[in-house]
Image (cartoon, rainbow, N blue to C red; front, side):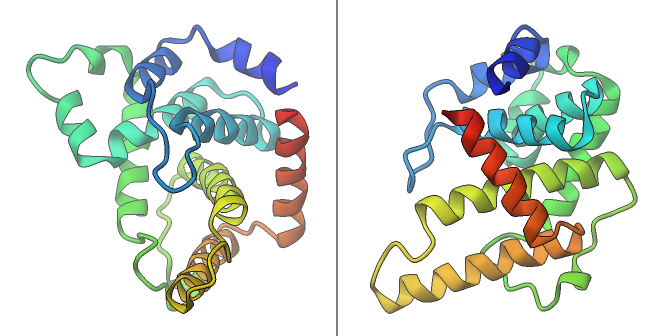
Amino acid sequence: MRHDFLDSIANKPFYKLIQQKYSGKVARRSGVSYMNHIQEGAFILQLIYGNNETLMEAFCLHPIFQNDKSLSQLLSDDSDELAFISPPAIVLGMEYRRVTSSYKIKNKIQSFDSIEIGPLDKVHKMLVADKIQNKKDFMKYMYLKHDRPSYQKASEHGLQYFDSWLNRLSVSQEMYTEIVEQVERNNQ
């Protein structure tokens, strides 16, 4: 199912753009391709909310808006990439950037209800897919993977961070587990 879904977006301009940006890039700690985050997150988005092209476009391109360097390149005078992004996806990407930039993993979240997620339902949906996928990879590749006390503390902090986000977004542990199982099944 995931491969059929990926085939359905593979030729979209937004997907080609993020593929170009992420080509050959991997996460430092896990060694997992950055495109894996986009693919799994887009799959989660489609699984939960169905196929909405603007939502899918904004999700797939969110790293371009989230990263300062990528955003600056996107807006540079010698770039024509902005022309390939729909105006609604640009708005959603910028709102996503605003929300997530306020709550980085290195910062402690005092309580989940202190996370200000803004008024846009599509951004909430993007956040659900993003945080489920991020927590899945965190649990698989980083959580309690080292014996040093500092890593143990960082693992607990990371778990608290993701659980706070998921609680704020009304994603139950059962929903999280079910979605992750479907992602893993479809990765086989």
